[in-house]
Image 1 (cartoon, helix red, strand yellow):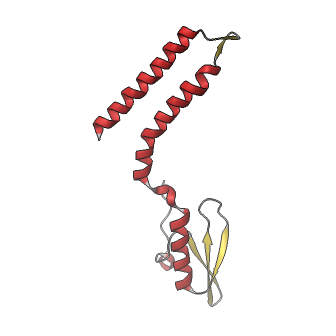
Image 2 (cartoon, rainbow, N blue to C red):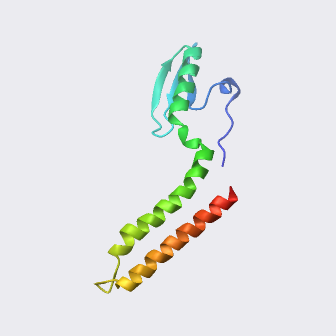
Image 3 (tube, helix red, strand yellow):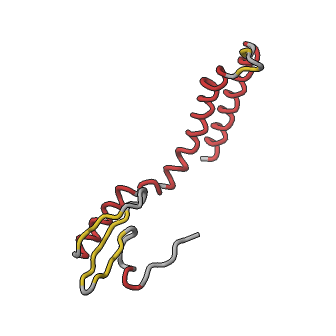
Length: 125
């Protein structure tokens, strides 16, 4: 669900910058996107807008969608390797270690799954 639109008086402000009107003065405050803490930016609108734009650039870098897509294929490969090297050797069945033949087959399946999915991703590019 998208947030409600800004009011007419604050439409020209960047995101996370808010205006507080006290009498004849307008005070600007910046809300940190991750923590929600507010910081005062003073009464100068131009300086507050510029500072808010810089802060948004620094703090809101998680929205890079292209990088998320490119990293998603690596995340699967990393997880399969982690499962193969860390989790699988630690598994036990009724208190006993898994047999060497089962471990060999499980590692082979993980490797085949990894190669198959990476080949599919390479073909889609």
